[in-house]
Length: 244
Image 1 (cartoon, rainbow, N blue to C red):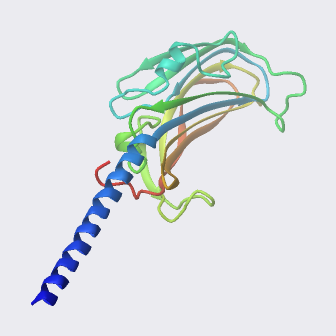
Image 2: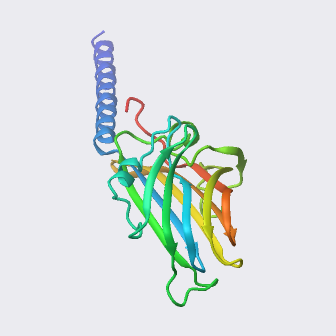
Image 3: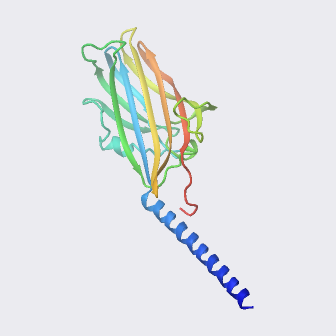
């Protein structure tokens, strides 16, 4: 009888220790995640030309969530977007379907030595911290994208982009360009946004999504053009504590 009691007591202690360990581990991992998780958006826009442009007006989509909230609004409003040339005017517009930055400049004059092989490149960018973790698995439905997202289709992930978890797609959106230039001038516009979460539970971990849109135009341009986009989402690890 005493042996049965001792065995039962031993099993109870083992179960209690295991249960306490699970509760302690779960509490630690949840606390570590909440205390260290940081969401960051990195936005860039690159414009290239191989010849002078005159009377330039551009409406370029900037990343916004499905409700139209843009993470770069404050950066543009406070002129904190790095790389915008002096003399360029930037104004944000909410069209109801997308958020766009209007760029105007009397002229874009490339430096001497510019050519089709070595075009003049202007890149402006910003980095913004998110107050909450970023949804990196469903950016179209819940995070910052170049909108409107049209003709969304699944596709194979580009080499180096896939990690076994990634989902990749192509889509289109629009840009407006108006300028005067030589007939053989080539202008490209490329914008990109990366949303990434970083946290530490015993070791650094992260997940992210990335999207970019681009187009190439030749000669005088006076109207809307299609931006071709690529999206990769769900990259990284998602073993996040259930209660976090």
